[in-house]
Length: 149
Image (cartoon, rainbow, N blue to C red; front, side, top):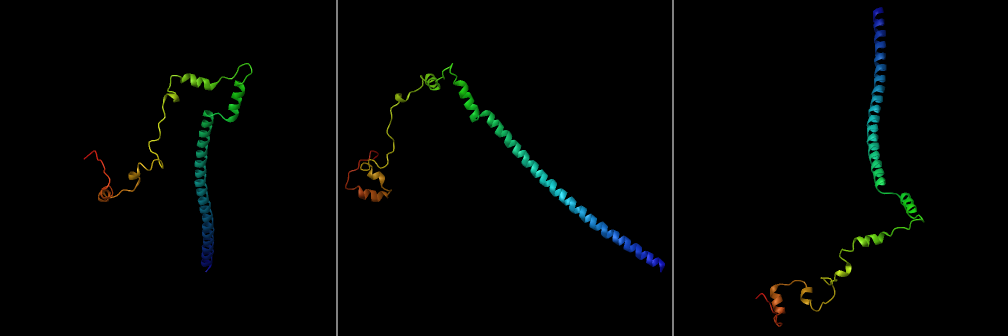
């Protein structure tokens, strides 16, 4: 009987230890799951940071290529020194293109298609298409010259 009580005590002790171990292992599994989720979120955030860094680099490169307003204003201030008169840019452009075709060298032509004008002369063409038989009936009283016949 004494051995039975010791056996029961051992069973209760081992059972209690198993229950405590199960609770702790569930806690550890939950923490590991949270760590895995956080690592996935961190990977997503790192990808977003990389994308934003590349966009920032692209913007910086574009800014280097295209001067901002303050840079243009500084250049205008530097170029408008009272000791040097500003250079006329327009005259340079025209001087370079003197051998090019001038607008006065070309005669203007009226538009090829006129809508709404001259409806009297193109009545036949302004109507919707009709069958050949009906067309022959309508034009029977008029003499139509067909150069292809």
